[in-house]
Length: 66
Image (cartoon, rainbow, N blue to C red; front, side, top):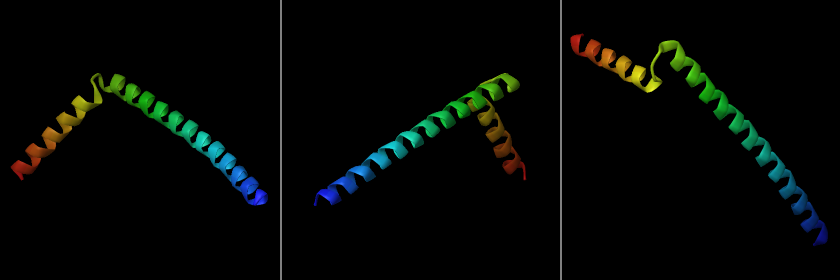
């Protein structure tokens, strides 16, 4: 029983470390996505959401005309 407990404790420790590693990767990815969004907004000169709305409007109009 002690061996089983020790094995489970080892596994739990491993999974805790893996979880921290994945959380760090996720945080890095979220930061990169945020920075990419900011770069794009500066390049197009307006918030991305505004540009998305403009593109959607053009697409809707094109469908109606077709």
